[in-house]
Image 1 (tube, rainbow, N blue to C red):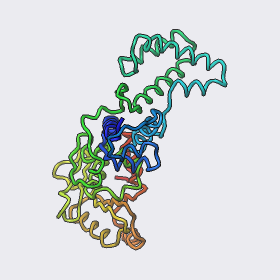
Image 2: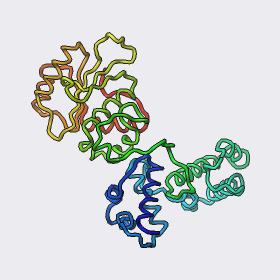
Image 3: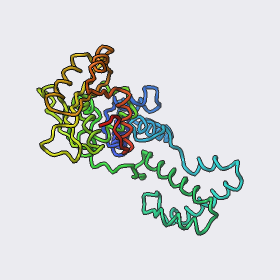
Length: 335
């Protein structure tokens, strides 16, 4: 097909599977200019070119991995993977072949092309338990999971399965350029951006400063706190106010949060100013959320004067993203 048509197809399928809309330049940036399909993505030609299906599949899965949608860059074909895995063990390989045969007769031989087409997983597992030895169930579960993953990672339109049925796509560039905190998948920070930053943590310092505030607010909402995020400008030095979920409306904030997305280390002035705000509002403590870290002088002042000021630095933020990605819980500090 012509490059223009292929680039449109590839970008649309990435958007469908990941929920993120990327420009041609962003696709090539994440794949790398040396990827076999990169010339077809960036070209504006309407002259047909020949592309290998396996190169398209590999590039698609690699990009999904770069966007945080897959844990590994290449998924492969489930039956082939398990066939190779169990070949050294004659008994398990025989079980695998029996499981594969039952899966075919139960589902695919009836004319269904994908597992997303009405596959009844619990019923199939019951059939495995009733028909085959005990060890076959683990093989069946492994096989089904691999096939589901390969369908979710496929670029082809006849594999509609995806991990999340996103209702719309959002532009990846919005993470870096947009001040808006409006999102359908989250309270202040979109879940698709969580996935992306989990896989591209080095870009944390490049995101829009307002999105950086949204990320911090999202973490506290995720952990059951009530959050009030300021206007972003002229906020008096406090970006976010946080209360425990059972706090009264009249109670002072539990935590005052100051967000600093910057390369420079946090100085003493910011620490002292946040401490003054904590005292003024009667809060329990303050938190500096930063893409950098405290300067030695600022940390010395904080500790020497026993200021109730904590720091969420880059290492902490990486852990926050992992929690948000995996829907885990837990605050790193004793609040």
